[in-house]
Image (tube, rainbow, N blue to C red):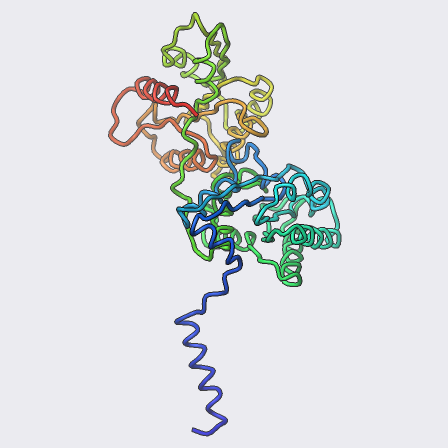
Length: 415
């Protein structure tokens, strides 16, 4: 074999070995990972961003990817002591972020800052300003002694204010800043794009609306960032909603003393909820407002929800959409179900309890052609980090018994 043919051969062998035994990239945060693995010291992480980062109705009002990231890191490193701080505010751009970086981020003296802005910059600021602001955010964090991860935002459904093509250009700028500043990158956008290519429905079910991810999407973001930090994958798919779905209602009932509990419920649960509580009503004044559903389509219920619940500010909302409420197609079914849930939650942090009741509770027989929608309701509710009262397979009790049991179990739970 002459020298001319040796080099291609060596290249071929090296390429094959690299394919079979890929080199693991250098750990980006060795000191942080050592602390996480040993639990030797608390690791403080600030998640800095806009409404995708902040705590709003899109994820049920109790948790976001900030909280999920903490759970993911504990799954990877069980001994870890992690303090997660959410520094996300709705509507904010990188310019807004710079205006509050000292009190909201640097004042915490974080070990690590994750930065996810872009969806509002696309709609409000120039791409040049976005680039300059990202560079300044990185420099300010590093000057304060914090490590940084730059995160591209999630993929979206195109809208006039946020066309996909424009968002992709802003994502590329963020990648360029990461390269030029030697900052670790978590490319969430590409991760969601790959999901969309592989399974469009699965990707669609990670969105609360056209641009905001729901809790299913936040779990994906948290998994991505956790892998970026540790180099290890973990899954959050089995992490259920918070344990106390009736925390607000239960606290009022326990408090008693002439207090008042206000409930909004779709039929027939407007007539079942007070007996299900089995409480001394002399101590607590419980009032129930019916949320009418008869003869209404899902779109009509969505419009009704938009002006009903947040104006009333109840203590408990029971959503029991009947199978008779139809949508024109699957996308409209998903869209309206999500928005009925969105409008039934407070705008930001949870202010009242909201629970979904599956149609099988009162009507176990599934009409022909409704099987997919029945399963979608289960998926959609979980994706919102909300609790679902459901009929388990083989449970032949009447719906009132199922409802009563669920209420009693969860009213007994304390935060």
